[in-house]
Length: 111
Length: 115
Image 1 (cartoon, rainbow over the protein chains, first blue to last red):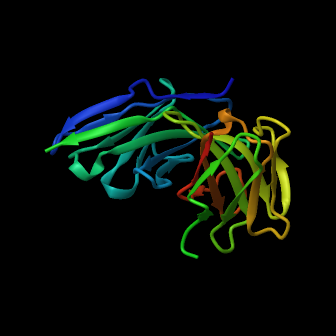
Image 2 (image 1 turned 90 degrees about the vertical axis):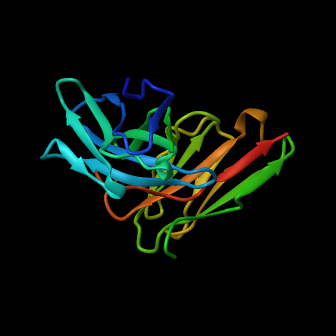
């Protein structure tokens, strides 16, 4: 079965430190992968996507993600975290037009 | 409009009532999607439309769930005889072109509580 996993329910980071939010996938064919962020009482906001090409994808708000085919991973990264980055992050894979989401990772950035 | 608009934002229903949730996609977007997000979980696919055609409804959990998009723009998700397990946030998304690779843009969702 197609699936996306986010192994960490919560990630805690100090402001200014680098952050990583992990994602692994199990989908057939060449994966199209996405990261979305969800703030309280708001919808999912698109951050970035991987379709093909360069394994390092740059997105909104200074976020980037690294696609690793051999490890079937697509980890989200940011060199220097901000308190305002605190939110719920979802990794997703596109299969047959539908997004398959991970269960989400709560990112908490403390001053 | 500038983004995907969903109404109502909150809906409380008594068990057994019918509800209708509305989605206004981004103007010009061909594809429209419905997802269900249970508390503490990632969204799960329900159904999608390309223009007025419902191309996939494999995620609808039962025949109590019905979606339509008669004119290829606004969509309505209807749930008949609501049950407590239907309580969730219902998210609508739209994308510009083909579903195969386009970014899906989401609305704020409708939070349904069934008492």
